Each structure stands twice: as C-alpha cells, then as structure tokens.
Image 1 (cartoon, helix red, strand yellow):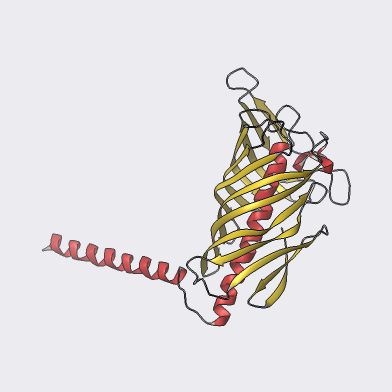
Image 2: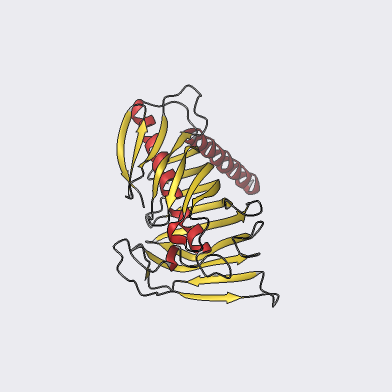
Length: 301
C-alpha cells in the first residue's frame, strides 16, 4: 500500500509538472493579447535584438585586432583610446600558443582578470576571450572560433561561440566574412537574459586598400533569432536586417541601417512588428524603435 501511494504521488507530480510546462510554453508563444501587452512584447524583443547585436558585434574587432600575424593590429580593445581620445593603459594580458608548433593553428587568450579592466570604450571587462585561428583572418578561407571563460562586460555575463569565416574570393577584394553567434547568451545580475543565434555577412566597403583599420567601413547583412527574459516576461523572436547595417571603425556603435524583429509565431498580418533604426550615419548611441506607428528612442550598449 505504501508503495502504491508513492507511485500515485509521483504520477500527480509528473502530471502537474507537464501541465505547468505546457502552460508556460503557451504563455510564451501566445498569439493573443491586449494592445498594451503586444506593444510591450514587441518593445522587449526589439531592444533585446539591439543589445545582442551591439555586444556580439564588437568581438569581430577584438579577434581581428590582436596583431598582424592573426589579423590586422589595432582594432577593438587594441585601439587603446576612449571615444574622447584619452589614452587608456592596457590592463589585460595576451597569451599566444601554437599547439602543433607551427604558425597555425594559433590560440590567443585575452585575459582581463577578475577585478575589472576598463576598455577603450569605457566598459569594464572581466574573464577571458579565447580564440583559435586556422590562418591569418585576412586570408580567404581562414576561420577564427571564439569562446568565453567567465567573461563579462559591465557585469553582463557573455556565453556562446563566436565564429568568423573569411569568405572573400581571390584577390580578396572586397573582404567578406561570415559571422556566426551560436548559443549566445547575455545574463544580467538580476537574472534577466538574452539568448541569441545569428548569421551575419560582413563586407568591407571602405579602407580595403590599406592595412590600417582606422579607415575601415563595413556593411552587415543577415538574420537572427533569440529569446529574452525580462521580469516575468519570456519572449521568443526572429529578426532580419532589412537595410544593411553600417559600421565605421572610428565609431563604437552601428551608425546606420534597420533590423525588423517579430515575435515567434506571430501571424503574417500582425501589426506588432518592431523596426530598429540606427539612424542616418551619425556616431551616437541612439536608435529608434517603431512598433505599429509608435516610435520611441532607445540607448544602445
């Protein structure tokens, strides 16, 4: 009898858990809601897309900028200056190893320590960025795969795989790269998070004929999908770049372009679509988010 009672209790717990999961999924993927709820969901997903884009985008510069052996020296955290051009002492260490005692593959570890390392952009980094290069990144076919070890930016934990593949065709002009973020995740101290998977094609449109990154300009195209948790809200979304994003080396933010974000499973005729507009080319941390005729300004990371 005692054994039978335990089985019954276990069955009840299993059924209750299953119902809870079904209810949770239904809530997350619900296609109905008030206008206020739909607006909130669209805002959260649109803002999450902008935050993920801005955060993971910078790793392209960091991975490329280590030195001329693996990339083109002097971009990302290696630029060494803030937006105000005030010199910043380098507070991270660089370790380069060659597992096969040959130039490639090469493994580069950027160690920002545990106490907090201010970067040229004023953001505080901790932990390690570890990248394996198959060849120098400006060579067609080269691949650089990055993972993160206890790494954070401004106390936002960064996880996932960042993969760069040089897809240029000989004579490698213009330079073109495929950037993949695989199981990316940004977790904030309060438990809120953004999960993000993306595929981008980055094409260099200016500065190709020089080895200095300071005149480089890139256009970015592609799509992504993700999930964001903010408080009690949990939203899945999909996105596509509808107007190429423009990045200049001299600006830490995207200066132009648009991204269209929609909640997963949203009906095709729904008006609840978020358009994230990065502006007309000015270097600033401002963008606009337009949803069903409502436009609001947001601040980029």
